[in-house]
Length: 261
View 1 (tube, rainbow, N blue to C red):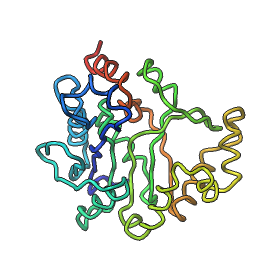
View 2: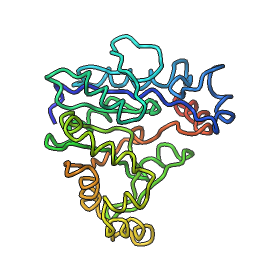
View 3: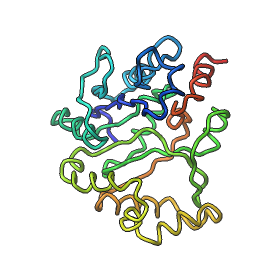
């Protein structure tokens, strides 16, 4: 993929839910509920991500969504009521020459410019939705104490990454489809109807027989879920793409890894 006109949207609106507030309170600054503002080695977590993207060749601009201080070189994007609203606000902020945009969460402080550059280089121009996956063993080797959710496929065991590349025109023209898919993300019967029963069965069976579900089958299922969009999974060998600080117990580990201990 050409990287001349790719804007990056950093999602920095991760407010801790009330039921988890007590466990997060010792880790966050007083009165703060936004995980993006978690201090890691002298700077807020989202700043680690922003600085990595700013150091990545080919990223044209950094768009920042969330109730956080605006960093130099970033443009603000209003946060929405849902993830889809925020993505559409990001699309609205693009200029005519930015035909792709990278979406990154603010909780991946181990991200490196090389990891981003490799994903951009491997992503096909024709894809509407590119998502990153990382071999589980790569994550465990780099961050052995941090837990990850994994999926076994015929090609191996993978964990999901926190980088996505989107075609803004796809979001503009398929807004209703994207909203519907997002609304069904926790609705198993609804997802089954969109993905198809054979895919659901393969997903369930892959826990004991990984060879039943392949990466192309998963890509085809996601394409159906998104109303016929072209979805592609890119295997990244960079553990920092998938190692997010998602739980309070991740915080001391993140500080240890970032300090090189």
